[in-house]
Image (cartoon, rainbow, N blue to C red; front, side, top):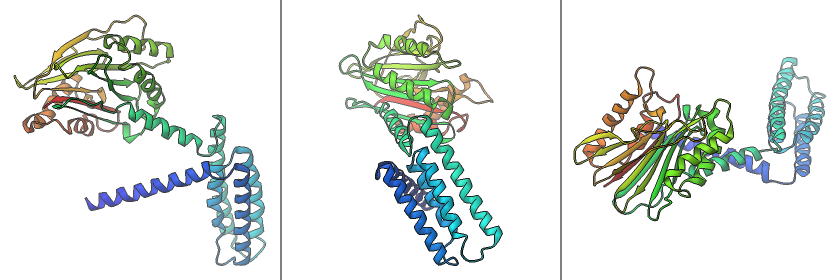
Length: 370
């Protein structure tokens, strides 16, 4: 545990340092000033090497190459590279450095410069430079996480969700959306699984989550999947589609309705009988395939001790068995929580213990009445 905590602290500090450098590069002085400062810094390092060739290594120029790649546009980056070559040549006019050492340092600087050049060129093709692109992605990722914030529920009601990308990718195709319901005092939830996984599905996942979060709780529950299907059809993805399950919960009276679109069924545990049942036995096709599809809704009621579990196929799929076995596995995993009388932590447990491991996106949502 101590080692794990220490690792987390180091990772946190490293991330903070990276954010600080990125912020300094993106929000520091104006770009022409940055260019002048970097050129003066390169000249100062070269003078130090020239004055104390045995004490100051030529590789000290390398951090300036990285900072230039982070903080300069492509045109000014090339200007800096030209200046850097001159500064490096200046350092070779003193002392008698070994040829292999001079060549190795030059190769290291050149490879770093080439890498930063391609990074800067890719960003400039998007109309951004420096770390602006990273800031945009970070903001989008944070916004996507807010879409899954659980709305306030009355006393006695609880809900938890968990989501993780394939191999820990921050961007993923599994989406959890939560919002206050269209009807007064209701709450609505949706799990969406965009085709693909991890970074390959990340762009479509962000687009879909932003669009569908604007629909959730703003249109009648029976229209949500219809509207979502229309949106995805209009995207005209070459090989893209999405599955989804939508829940409209009335916690005042304990009623709920569920509608699915090619998604694994929602599962309900009924404390009165100690049994599990599939709620969405009848559902429509996956989203984005064709206009005019219908998505039947199933109704149910939750009493004290009941739980509703929703999950994506990444949780229950495995190469060794079919989905039916995976659904049974969910019930078996939940039995410990049933005995404890609380389902807190079940969503995270489903994601962490997914039958297929970490090679797919996973998401789970658990709603229970205590």
